Length: 508
Image 1 (cartoon, rainbow, N blue to C red):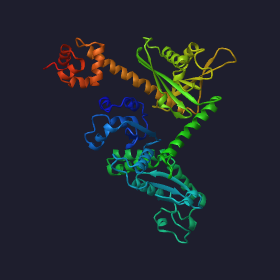
Image 2 (tube, rainbow, N blue to C red):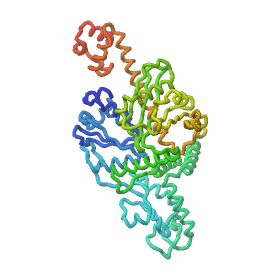
Image 3 (cartoon, rainbow, N blue to C red):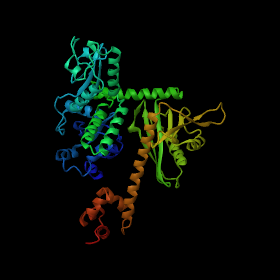
Image 4 (spheres, one colour):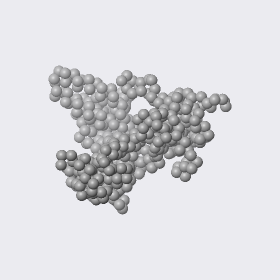
């Protein structure tokens, strides 16, 4: 990836890609004027975008042509893959990027509509809906696959029969005789029991389908053991459809990218507000989370990730290189990072002080920081630790996260106690981000050190020549493939150039 990105002449694009979240969403490649070149979707934004700058694009010549024109990347996170697919399609239709060869048609996705305010609600698959109908019911979707939607629509009707008659009929319809309509207008089912069927379908479309899928999976394994592979395959496909249609989708018929983003931000703002009330804080605008990554004290880095008003602020992430502690001591390293962050000389670097300082550590780490940072941390900041507890979420699952809080005991010595935080999702997300960000820079440092170690073995190659070679060739692999003349053009010393060439080409 490094070589291709460097060839673009883009200084910060590689860093921007590495900061992308490993979450679903859509990405836009932009040219130097901000014009959209390409729009794509991803289940993992960082992995997907990174793949464009690898050497595996030979089967996609059109996309390969686009790479040199990419000067910036814009993303929008989504809740799941289906939302990213829907948003991608809507944006491609709107902007019609040159390098998107498909999805430029006007075909709309399908929705499932339930007329919940009718006496006997009916259910149908629609592509468009009137305002009058919207007021009298609920929409579920959108669903990119109309075929999967139709299959599940039929399946749900077998489980929970419903009426699709447009008006009251005195006679039973064909679907009644097929067992797909319970005959509400002919008195074969009470209004209460009919509503139960509709409510079960709504529960399913809201994502509450675990019991049904679990039972199907059990039957599928039984069929497989009995070598009844045809029936097992039918159930496998049905399970896939159920998972697909049961995904909760937060996308409305008239949504734009901006309205979708704003609604997501509003959800995060509410999380901030609920967390503020739960912790009894006067205000909660900014959270900073810190983590440390090192190997026995070597190549140590501290990371800082930020959320403001419910929004993850990747533009304000910071990395701290720790060079004055030579043994593994996470609390001491955290203390050093926080000292540097809140040094009065650094005030201009940050927009404001955090209301919550979250560290990846438990009671022991929090105790060390509380004693070592008195008078350094902003007095209005609440210090919270997050650690892996002894309890498991369920058998075979990962450990539960535990939260630790420093409390003021009526002017006496501060106490640290474990607290149960209900609105903890934003804190867990930040901890995971801080961990990933610290490891990212630690790994980069390890790779850089490994490269330097290899070059240091060559006679005549010191720090200055090593730096020059890596700057000119980008990486060791490219240097290995270079001929003698190219190496000499870089360092302008024929004797040392010959030593380098011989080192990487011993058989010649």
